[in-house]
Image (cartoon, rainbow, N blue to C red):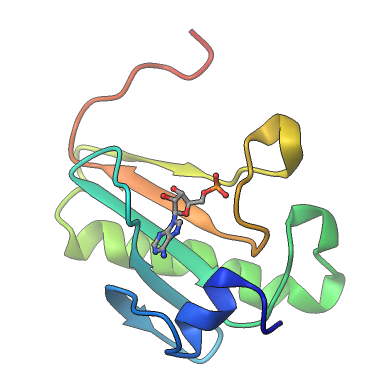
Length: 114
Ligand code: AMP
């Protein structure tokens, strides 16, 4: 997907502040962090959104969550806790159409449901 921002970051065509590069999954810091830790964990394969996930992606999706766990530990936020967000579609506030898990922590956050 040559016109996909995150595909281009993964391919090294656009700079990314990488904290993980794996066979299935990569992770880099969000360019506009909303908390002291704000990392985007992305499949290396282009999956536009959760609406496009297929059964064959199951292992990749599992790897996203295992990477989130590992990065939370290496960022020192595992014990205090953190938030994982996966925005989907216009109502979900998705801006970049390459599936990504936000790992956000380092401060106490308000409950998203009020
Ligand atoms: P979402 O609204 O869930 O699609 O989130 C997209 C995220 O991508 C936002 O938090 C942006 O700050 C982030 N973002 C946009 N461009 C870049 C970039 N070049 N490098 C890192 N993060 C980016």
